[in-house]
Image (cartoon, rainbow, N blue to C red; front, side, top):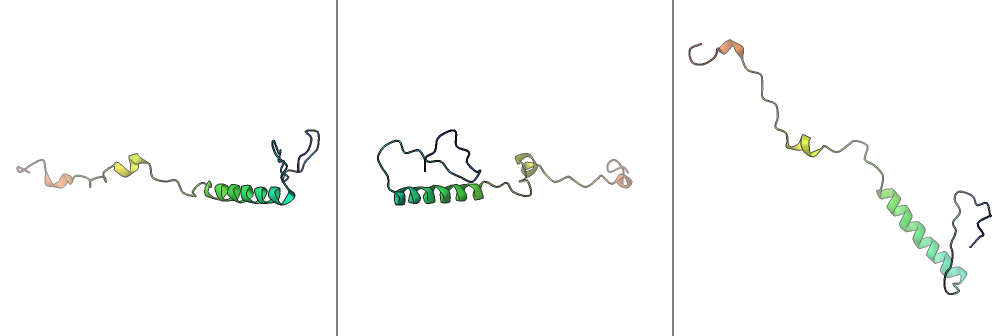
Length: 78
């Protein structure tokens, strides 16, 4: 599973460096399966939403009032 830095590896390959101990092939396969699944779950949850969420400014603003009716006049004398 380990390779030297001069080896040309395809984009979908994985490199595992064992720093201590002597794992079996089954142990390495289990490790790769767990890490791959965890990465797939994380990348699936990291996708952006299609529509942007409303900002705090948009949520807190009040609705616009209706325009003033100019035909009523400017007070009780109109």
